[in-house]
Amino acid sequence: MRECVADKEEDMESRAATSGGLSSRSQGPVDGPRADAELLSVRNLKIVYGNSIEAVRDVSLSVGQGQIVALLGANGAGKSTILKAISGVLYTEDGELENGSISFAGANLKGWSPDRIVAAGVVQVPEGRRLFAPLTVRENLVMGGHLVNGAELKRRMDMVFDLFAPLRDKQERISGYLSGGEQQMVAIGRALISGPKVLCLDEPSLGLAPQIIDEIFKVLHRLKDEIRTSILIVEQNAHRALALSDYAYIMENGRVVMDGLAADLAQNRDVKEFYLGMGEASEGKSMRDVKHYKRRKRWLS
Ligand code: ATP
Image (cartoon, rainbow, N blue to C red; front, side, top):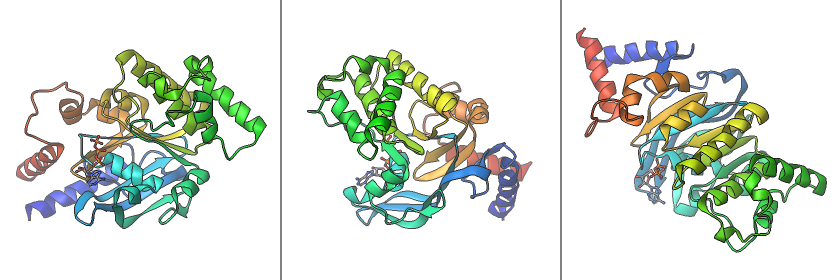
């Protein structure tokens, strides 16, 4: 009975969220700030590894045209698994999309090969960069442009060197010998050269020094403001991710436990406490505890 009343209240919350507020659970296809131009949408995903480990349960999210969406959450929450499902590479890790749908620009991506998904415009920069280490910077970048002709490739290479100036003079360097920050620049540059309609970034700041993270995020802000690239970003650094993004989803244990406008989430007391390190000690608690506590509180009041 309590759950019932609380659920009704939650439904009202969800409806309120369509006008830009916060929601404590995943939204349906018509939600989010720019649903009118929805580009990428995943619905009710259930993903299992090795027939036994349920990594993602009933997750729905969407990215609108030109929108930046952050996927936040602790280690093991299921964020990378969602990106792998979108990119069609789950099978390489014995993962399977057991339920749900992934659609991009109206096409259902289920069963598509990774290269077909890239050609369609959904391009991932995986965690850990995954460059071809023995190849030069230029060769790695050219890999991203194998589907375009010479003049267009040159235009895109110039765009990457404009965004990542340090790479211009290092085109003939062996990628494996670059610093972590430079390698991340090459990885993002290679993805950009393929002309993504949605860029999926998995932990672009992982393992980098603060100054380098600044540089990477400066470029991401330029992609947002000047090029209007649609981006889905998985990031541990919630501060920076929320400052960059329009909308954000927070995951725990394979589920979305909260979503809303990034600017609102950045001000939310619970998010500040759990993800931005600005509240009282939150050890041993989770966002789900907060949600249930709030449900009880509403019921009792
Ligand atoms: P992180 O930031 O640590 O990568 P994440 O939120 O991206 O965390 P995932 O990597 O998606 O989390 O992992 C979600 C769950 O799936 C975890 O419990 C993880 O142990 C499990 N998992 C991930 N990859 C595999 C795999 N290849 N085989 C089995 N289980 C996996």
